[in-house]
Length: 428
Image (cartoon, rainbow, N blue to C red):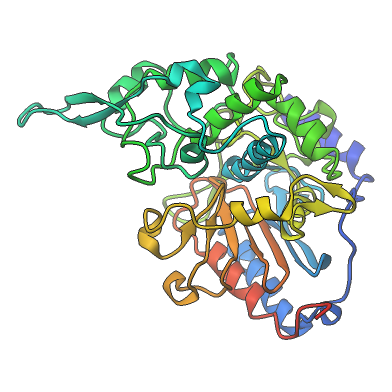
């Protein structure tokens, strides 16, 4: 046994008795909130089948309705090689599910009168005062691009809706982004603060004119730098004191305390020949969340959390901005966040996009089970959530699989949750 594995085994044993899940929402029976126990068994059966067939290492799933948890299950292993069972308080890399938290932080500052969503980003981050957009170069000029000035200032709302034209550096001007050392969503290994990275991003050619296209990329990381500037505190401190502590999200952070290492899930990758393999150390594999530099707080993809913590965050949104007496947002602000801001720019209009997540506007156009107004988003590590205000449902699916190799379990999870909803909304 290697020193690393021996150390990990020891840490797992030390923490084995600490299985209690902190600050969970109240638990209830499925029948008490209009869910079918037999139909929830279908969900368990399918999740376990994918684990048994080696398609995924482990999962944690939660289904809450009316603010009470009716399903909270673990499947598979937290670490396959060490044969460590998945645990309910396992800590997951949240990747792009961080974006909803950063979006909430921005709207909180709006509520305090410290910014307007229509404000130009340059009002707070001067480097964005004059941005440029890449355009195709002359015919026959392979690999070359031209530059034109942005037609207007990028606004905070553009960043929240991913219509600022900012990608992850792999668009027409990819060579320039690569030369600047800014490509891909992973920032946890950076030895510079997010503000410095945002300033460099501002100097690079963007993929589209502001407001003209949905372009997924560093927009929410830039918002993190903006939150730091407007609030006057580092993003990790803002999240901890203004969001995590009020919501009792005790295991959510950008980097992991060493004593919590045994609860950090191991990342796996879909193998080309089938099955899964342990992802490499560092980078988008195991990452630098414990032993990294702990300098760059990437609001777009940097958070760690648990199923319990993230469910509490989502329940706050479902409740109109409040949970157990802690109010982060007003109901009208949540209504603004969960409205479509982009018309048909996202997903060809099949679903809309609000301030941090996608939104069902028409069940038929979406092509999946759900309700008008349901919000959802996912993660590069193959995690996903959805919140249905009409059915009062919060559902969380957490895994650590990248790349996922075309796995279809996320959409099956959504279907399996909805097929278990058979009774009226609690309290109605």
